[in-house]
Length: 593
Image (cartoon, rainbow, N blue to C red):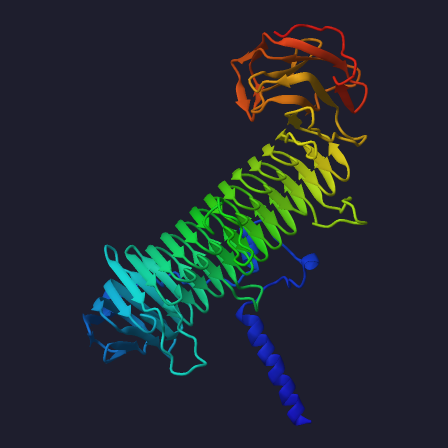
């Protein structure tokens, strides 16, 4: 009886220890039970916090233990470190100033006491042919300090030697089993020939420094998290560039970029997080899988930046060139701000569950599908999409009854400026499409099989300006189809109009409704606006000129239209009025001003 009680107590205690190590408020058990946040501050409440303290980066220089590397030998001036041949072992917390070169040796940190081990690198050059040049075997916390004005270099051999066949650590040029930070104004160059460049089996914080990593596998790994608070980081990796891969606890396995300059060239994913990717600011320039001109590999994930749970961008500058998805999440993506330029051999932005865009300047210059998820909401921002398939694709990726039907997915535009140039459907929703505000310009494809707008459910446009320019008589678009929708006109011309020819609509009093310049030739034009009124007559012009105004996405405002040729007129009597292709043209109206 007492034995069973003790077993029960031990089980509960073990569970609490595991829970406390990386506690998270939300328990993510399935896609349908996921809790996501709209901001990084909310997401960070659920993530394991970093281990830094305000005084971590200040110390008494007189306390430094001097470690001098002399080719094949090492000298130590002070306590806390011992030498055996070309290996120095640090066994106490403290401050260790390391200088000189080591032809084939190692610095090992193996402490049992609490406190920080500071490795102050002062023009340090370490080569180790059969293991990690710096190996943190055990420590409360280790900080690598890059002394200002110094260049520090670490490299290893192509194979490591272990004491037994069941060991596989260390496996990186700079390797720590415990929490690791990097700080300073100097530089660190890592040439990793065996496996990874920098690895922490707990958390990794890069606070500052000029860091260059070249690696035969992953560049920089932090199992619990990678947090970048500053510095300049350049990674060239045959595997992934950044990786955080704790898959046992939902509060770990995340990457947080607070600021800094980051450049990554990788064969695999440029950044890959098991849970969250959180980008607050900074400059991120990555190329993965050879870039967007290469085909996506069926065996290697080569995405630009990938998260397993949620992906939040609140600012910064991102330039992604990837053979696979440029931005990817297995669950959700939220973009609140930032300047984002994407070129992808697959999707520009893809999330399995949802995408929400609340601001920012987003340019997708190349993609297969521009923006894809089961639920897509745009509230604000500037978005330009060029795609070889659909521009926006809202889908659960399912068909029902053997045919494509309404699968419940949603595409919602509440604001922003959106331009889509697609070789397939401009806007494709296997569910519904709703627009309440903003300006949306769609340049459709010439193929008869593709539509400017292709929606399986309702198309409800109740605000904003929607323009769909179709290039040929064989192309088409679906139109708003609910009783709540604002009024629209679908205009067919008798011949294809040049892209240099303005499309203009004005009311009976000569007031401008729209002046638009397409970037492609056009045969038909769908225009939806809250300015259309039932029973009113409007006049369509082509050609002419526009002066003293502004132009955004081909839409002119604030100036004067003049000199056009009246094509037709129409009177609003239904939600969608068709002009041309057999429909009756209206009477002559006032000429263009």
